[in-house]
Image 1 (cartoon, rainbow, N blue to C red):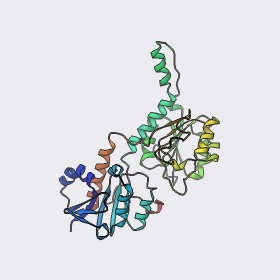
Image 2 (tube, helix red, strand yellow):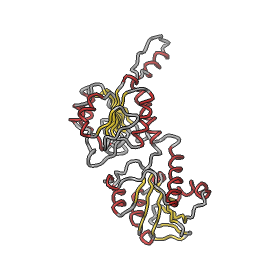
Image 3 (spheres, rainbow, N blue to C red):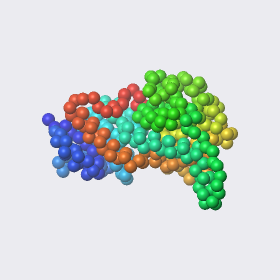
Image 4 (cartoon, rainbow, N blue to C red):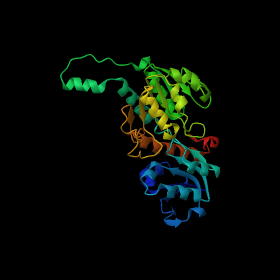
Length: 329
């Protein structure tokens, strides 16, 4: 019996040629925010439909009503597997779906892009690029010392695909690296690994702190006043995970007090960031509009992950990036 595979209309337009070339025994259903699923050109209510595999691609971000898509999927009679473009699963939609018995696969496609963003931003802080440009403009011949990354200590919170890609690049600069993760399993890239219980030991030694962990009950707001009180003076903080990890008031106090030299923020409690947020104008904050994932190779990797995973699913093999339902909260 053919496997039922559902995706947004736009997604199918993009992937159809590659998907058809695999010659899989599947029936493709499409949907959009109208609340209907199209099967062989006929609109069907989702509560009448059993779906083996749903691909939720980034095209949902172009939808005028993202919630309607989530509601449609939740209304389906059954969904065996959902593969999402998201790395983080903190949206309540994923918990609701997981509680119904759906297996969920997240994405590593953006990990390379985000890791390059991290390195570019840190390099732009430690290297006096702006000063060098001014000297060039003024035709001034002057030495401009800079800090070598090889002399820095890094601490990465979270060691999923994004944390691992950051770690690879940190090691290429021969910096020292510690990792805080759910379990203290060793890594070929990290000098030390630990859990949140080791935070007070690892944090005071870190020159660069990267937040790459999921937002859940254990991590929400963990970068608070006691956290920043333990930060090494002059450290750089980068958040490419979720805004909810940080207590913004405590962050601003740490910046004003000189505990932190710079905060590089790509994610926030509210997005878009409100116009009246003090983060926009703070001299020690560099912020971007949740765009660290926007590398030119991400969409191609998203598509390939779906093609790889649907092939594995049909073959009855282990899926890529399937998430333990116990950590979806």
